Length: 265
Image 1 (cartoon, rainbow, N blue to C red):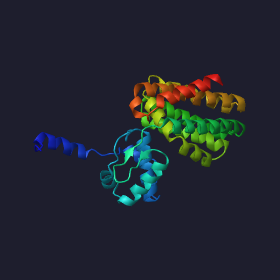
Image 2: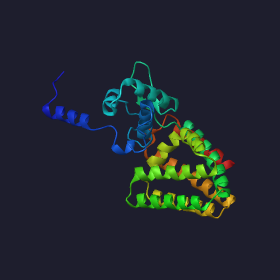
Image 3: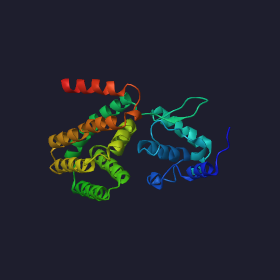
Image 4: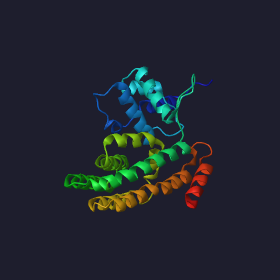
């Protein structure tokens, strides 16, 4: 085998020096939580926001070195991610980031849409002036992030907006159920963010939801949320057309079947 050249060695060293996780990955992680939870949160966010793209290998050694942890919390975190179909663990082989599984994603979208449409109706009936101020602040922050534009911040603020509505309608526990179910949905959403005018469209849809909530109109709030979440399928088709290699085998056929059923209902 030929020996690598000096240039090749320098390139490998340069690549090894690049951190896996950018600093913003850790912005929501609480230092007081157990190491396994911190590792899981960092890995999950990195997968959802495409720092670790579908199909890429999980470099356990480098991750442990970067996070200053042993293999135990990482492997416990990977088991949880495997349960969510976000990584693929093959014994005695390397672990990889799972491709986007369309069936799991459609299940997540169903859970999300069913619960959030109900929650926004409840929120409309429980609105207070304090809730209105919280929604106004959220919209202001979203506009500021979109103006930069900062896609990672926009995504986080989008999540916080929906969590706020869930907490008004019921509780943050309900949002945790939704969040757990929609991991594959979120990967598609994040991939669709660079799409032309997508952030502006999201802001318009969120503004319509806020208007309905401030009107204390459950029917109007339901309609606005249903329309907003239903637009996800436009994003899905856009992403699949642009990056079909990121999806599991048979995704195009399954999506076509699902959309056919939707049109006939």
